[in-house]
Image (cartoon, rainbow, N blue to C red; front, side):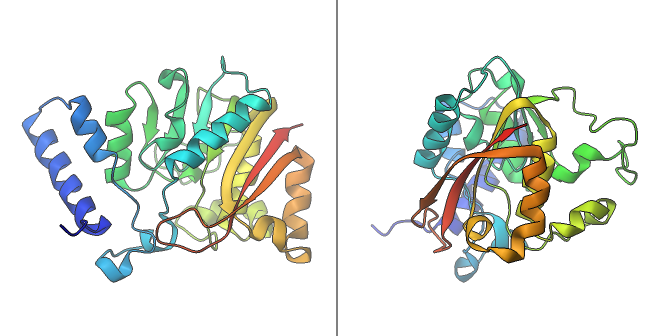
Length: 256
């Protein structure tokens, strides 16, 4: 029997969630295992997927999740503190956390966000762009002036994630003039994620290898990031996503 392609599986999961939520039924452990098979649409254009997610929705494999948390604990993670995943997808990267009530995530894919809500009860999942953490609620059209963020879990002990890649251009990017020097959205996630850490807190990202490979072209961004944190460790990985050959690294930074 031929294996079902990921796009078709995603469609079945979306319909399953819609039916389940409409009926008001509870999700069983078996249901959660099923919906956790949902993947982002990154690299699935040839299978029928559409939309901007084709460019950045590459969800983190479980073995990489475990590796990133092992590294966090090795480098002294304070597990009594709060955890932020700024592009949480279905929530895989908070699964190893000891207390989901101390976890915060942002996600713009409503299906992925719903799966995270179902799978990790107690976690605070915001169905919006990470940028909104730094803008005045509820309209998010004005930068905050007196405080960094409205997030009550700030400052965080750990910021962990697999941020999107590419040019930083969305409906909120214009509110961050200093971030224009960063250009790439993954660099924005580095810079703003570090701001949300407590002193000594850890940022651990799975990211495209450009951050370490692109020497002079990333100098200004690296200087900005270097003022906030020190590089603790870095690992070059083979391709880790099912639908992409993009080389990736794990980067570990500690807030100064």
